Length: 116
Ligand SMILES: Nc1nc2c(c(=O)[nH]1)N=C([C@H](O)[C@H](O)COP(=O)(O)OP(=O)(O)OP(=O)(O)O)CN2
Image 1 (cartoon, rainbow, N blue to C red):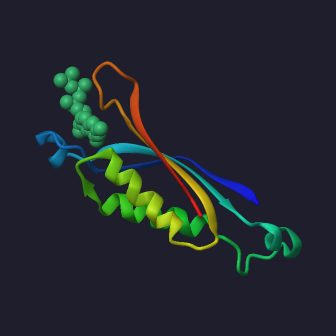
Image 2 (spheres, rainbow, N blue to C red):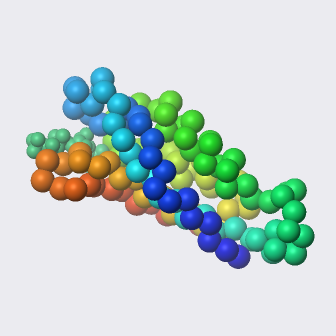
């Protein structure tokens, strides 16, 4: 097993339920941990059949860019569900930050985790 980490993925999307948030895209900062079996990748050192971190990153980018959720919880849940669809993923953890969403805080985030 190994932990693949996708760090500080910055994407602009519609997120939030305030009127201005329904109109204007905001940054979300996404951190993802994915636990997968990497034994074959280690043994063969070949790209065929690997769990491809580029592929899942592109899927997450598309999902987030096209989404228009009200709540950070729902966006985080959808990203986690997308990652867990792949049977090779044993555990995943997703943290979605909404920087500067709160007037008196640097950031606010929601963290969700799942395993099989
Ligand atoms: N559990 C959740 N609570 C809130 C969410 C959410 O997604 N999950 N979202 C929001 C708003 O969309 C936004 O992120 C913050 O609200 P906002 O009124 O802009 O917060 P401020 O600190 O800027 O409020 P001020 O009145 O300007 O101080 C809220 N809650």
